[in-house]
Image (cartoon, rainbow over all chains, first blue to last red; front, top):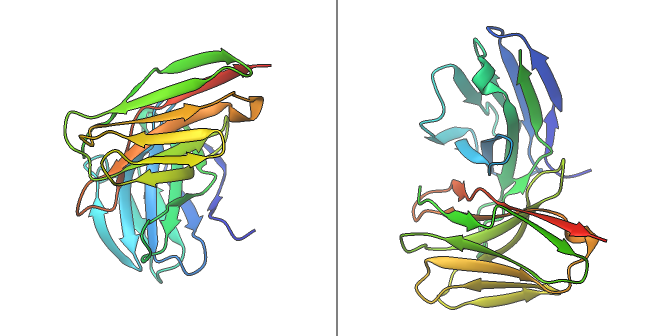
Amino acid sequence: DTGVSQDPRHKITKRGQNVTFRCDPISEHNRLYWYRQTLGQGPEFLTYFQNEAQLEKSRLLSDRFSAERPKGSFSTLEIQRTEQGDSAMYLCASSLVGGRVETQYFGPGTRLLVL
Amino acid sequence: GQQVMQIPQYQHVQEGEDFTTYCNSSTTLSNIQWYKQRPGGHPVFLIQLVKSGEVKKQKRLTFQFGEAKKNSSLHITATQTTDVGTYFCANKDTGRRALTFGSGTRLQVQP
């Protein structure tokens, strides 16, 4: 499978714990995005990388959230001191610069439940 | 980002009926993208529109971008059960890479 993959697919944690999610983009895609989606809503942008550089962060990304893409390939999203409001689907997407339309390809997501 | 509003929130149709979802903005949009998300799935890119008045077709799906570039629609002719899912419009602000999604229209098709 050469699509975007995310791990884990599901995560249940207790409030106050830290969690880390991983995203493996499509090979050779140089842009990687993180979105959050709650039930009945569209995805909300969190942050994006071009290669290893984090170029944009949403106001939604509080200081408890941190994302990395150390070698310009896979990325991790860490949430520290989780809160119940962090419960959501965390989606990763990747795209390739160039071409007329930049198509973002989404992964299956990591569903987080904070108890 | 520029906010896009989608209507209706939910539509239930009989198989074979047509379906339309609308995406509206109070400001001019540089482009509009449409995505489909199946139940339990992830968003899948359908199409991008950039020109005023643009109309594109994909089999039974017809996408339109308004003349003023403030609204867009997705029309499905003769729905099938495989069309079930949530349809999102999304916009990418000029100079930004992030997409701003609408809240989506959930389509249910009764066989």
